[in-house]
Image 1 (tube, one colour):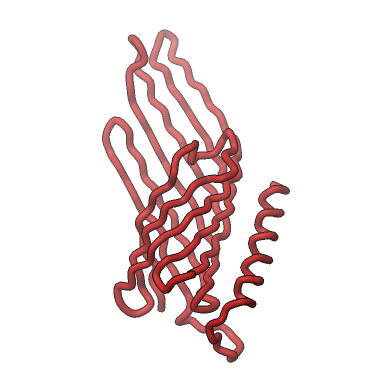
Image 2: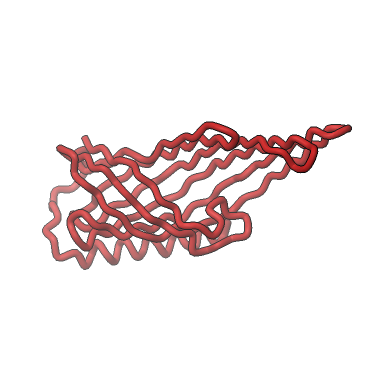
Length: 190
């Protein structure tokens, strides 16, 4: 947890430095501007022998034409049924977590994305043998997703967002394992 707090502090300080160096004109009016608010995230599902439901909302604020930051929530639920030899196995997992994120836009529609987060993971496996066996495990995992993406405007302050991220911490309990994270979602402004 200390590592996540340290990463978050470094990230916020670096975002401040990026915003201070921006060559673009920023409104000098003080106060909250609802037109700069961003709401969106990802929603996904798959059903079959392996099933998944992913609900990952986010909210953020566009501080300047070059920088945006906010918070995210991660909720994923999976269940899988398969045979292991002569036994049927059912696995269920729940991933709940969240973190902060930041984006720097070097070009109008391309961005660099950083997202430190912490996830709580619970896993349950049932082996239907004689007698039936149940295994449960619960643990936490920090991650630092780094990568980039493309934001295609779709009208007003809204955009279709495509991202490719990678967990650079590679904690042994990371829900992302050693795989890139590809996501398609949206940001909707007011």
